[in-house]
Length: 233
Image 1 (cartoon, one colour):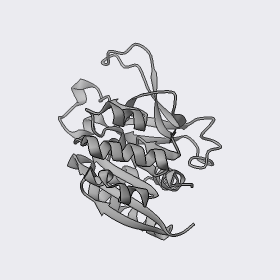
Image 2: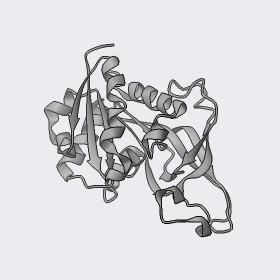
Image 3: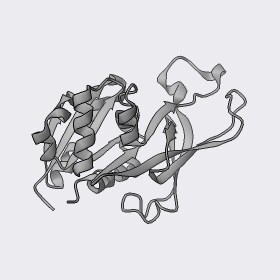
Image 4: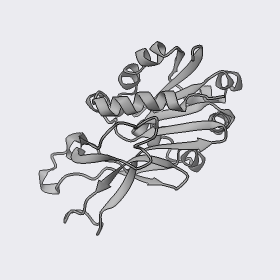
């Protein structure tokens, strides 16, 4: 399939390197036949003509805010068939003040637990924990994750609040530690898809830094996820 259009919307908190991170995937999209447009403001979502002509939105906007018109434009476009995809805080920690956005995405970053307090040095690496991304039964046969095995990462391990409209393709489990207040292991979705009207939503929580995005497993999941989410009709 050729002649598709992708809209890359990036900005927000610079700690997730929205420009450099999305730049990693522009050649892939172009190689797959997408005409790519890049915007640094989510107000583009309010442009009905642009959104109707867009087959895939790749969003990388951590935190930040979104206007009512832009949010309505995004939700309506996905409902009409535009795909929405992203990773880490660029999609799962965007627009914290908007419950309607959170409903569209299906999962919200809550925290990323840190290492032992005595080992913390006040750096972002305090939150880099070794953990495993575990492919679910559904994930073993899904187009995005088929053929992949469970794999380890040492990076932020997202604790996500979510609902059961998601089709969860991979999970990660937060263990019990004596320095954390929870009393049993808790499992969070790490990769999921979501149907919204005629549109598709894809979210992967790994992707804090460029080296994580370059991990072969993570990159494969994201590239497949971008293609899967793109408009189907």
